[in-house]
Image (cartoon, rainbow, N blue to C red; front, side, top):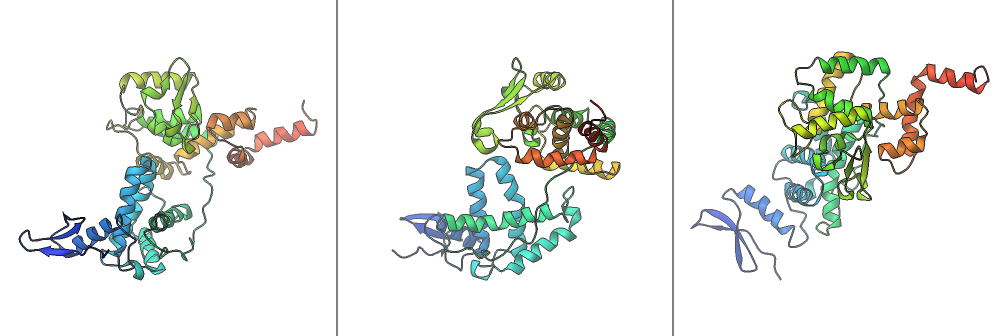
Length: 348
């Protein structure tokens, strides 16, 4: 069976393609029509090397929006759209080279104003950009729409570094004082407080709703399909301070996320990151949502809670992550010196 061709329909002043006897309208503009044509062809048969790259990018984002969690779609959306804009609508799969990715990545280092709140020079940030751009082509190969990825030989030049950020007690106090002085009616203070008191993931704090909140059980319960890994339900235990905070917000927001910004909108990852990023520059030390979670972990261990219990409270399935975070304790020389004195019998 021959491949259907795109054609111009003069009576409608638009390009069309016919699949199975049914005409499908594309676009009056030839370039846009060709991109739409190739996007449709992705669902019909393996694409040719002359397919525009943007057709694969668009189809990948459609797939993510329909079949993945919002956070996953959000991870890919902005980088993929940015890359599509950088390469333009005409570049074909056969012509996509590593230098196109390099040129695009260089743009993030120079367009700081367009990437507010993002650490555009960090290795982690660039590593994730490369991951996001290779993913559409790997997906197309997996779906048997491409034979090979044009970026299959492109090695990610950036190595990730663990988010090993921990706030010393005096830094936490300074952060709370700065946040308390913000004119946002305590919205930012609420969400960082619940992370500090529970050790929950930032995503969990941003997405928890009243129906997750078990007031009698003093916890949040996320069903398995809403939990990281989707293996089993995630239970976040609440101490008295976190419980009182959730009770207040559950009355205020009976529908939708409990924690919201001063505009009444749910916190997005970018918004929360940016608020803490700005405060970091003002305070003179690094602070991010995961710093609060790591602070919970480190202080729990310092107070004598065993690592297995800490891992369970934080929702980890093994001890590897908590053991790595445990390295923050090296910053607490007072705790280490006390441990040395106990180890050598100077104190009981």
